[in-house]
Length: 554
Image (cartoon, rainbow, N blue to C red; front, side, top):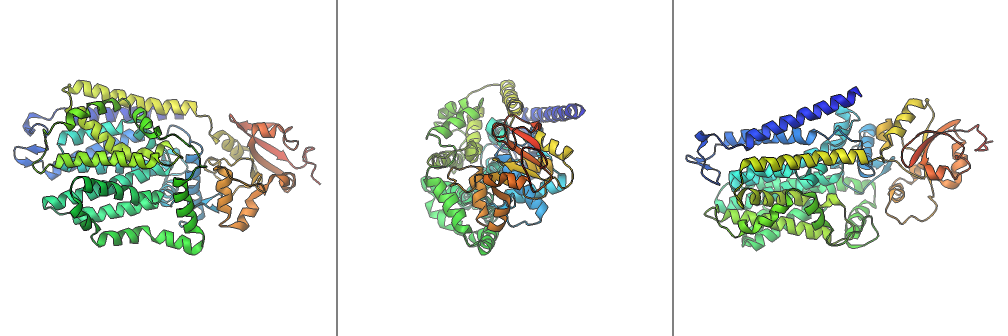
């Protein structure tokens, strides 16, 4: 109870600090600044670099505090958070920083960057939820910062300053920043790659330095590749290509392939893939052909959804800001505030190209998850922010009221999700950790609970008893483990035990601890008379004694 009170107090202090700081930053500037309307210019020219740096650091700190205020609040979500954090935990404990493993078996659904960051975080801070979500938090900061700096450099200052509050209080962004999977991390690098490449193109046209930005864009694309695969380069490349084509900058395209850029991309992005292919000859086919091209072009994978799914998700998960998109027509019809070289119009076109192209791209395959569309949220928030500050004349008091409403929805959503989610295995893992003696193993029967190794502090693979001799076609945890066992078949035979061998396997140890679906345990002679030690909504933890009458051990 005391721990909960302390956590609630810490969250309240973080929220209060963010609110007070936001009010200070978003309040009208002091008269001495004498800024020109709707521009980033003062009477003496561009605002000083020192002023921009201070403001950027202040906004970054506020954003970090805001996102961190509830990141610790709920247990790991199942299955995604438990799965990916579990892989990172195995990496940290095994010392093998090259090969991601799931229950000791090579797991090549995703590249390693998320696991590297999370493994480092868990090694430094321990098995706590906020450390498990640090990679997503960093991805969110990169999403916000890269687009903010692009807007701050090429668009009116007022827009850049309001972009961050709108983005930070958009529920899908707030939730994605606190969900431990690859989606927010790759969204961060996609955003950085697009923003840096666009800045380089605009700088070329304006006669400014552009090489460092372009090199950074290529490196960001390489890190996006290491975050979630080919979308790390395909999506930013597609957005920049169509933007330059539509904006009449197609002659500049060849300059974006300035030779150090592709070289940096290969140096950063290629080595891990080559090392994995050298160690596992079927790796490249499995990773690129099966996990990329077949998932994109074929059905049969999880979560099939209609074409309109992502537009609906973006509208609903961007409330209360989404209605301001209806005011875009007033902004798009107006040339007020455009710079002499029409840069404002070019940035608007970039943002729309970014939103439309990525939404269409992810709407094509039948398999759709909400997190896929996170790379769309930064440019969508920028378009909303411009309409919010430019389309209608409303006072800052009403703007701040709407900001507080949006922030309340974000925090309320996290609290509601925490109360509604009863899938965590934390109670089962805690009971095993407290009651099991040395040498008493844990066994999964007809399930693999991804979050148990995190909460139970397990160091070795857990035997999983299921129907392994039957064909597995459904995209689910048995298929993930069966696919992974192809890369280490000897270990796969040890940890994947067919259900026909369950009794013999449980008889090997005097005492075994079994996590099993409650309904299955109730119908199996070897388990149905065992009293559960702990349970959650669907699963029970059993202490199975080999000397008991039900197993008939000899």
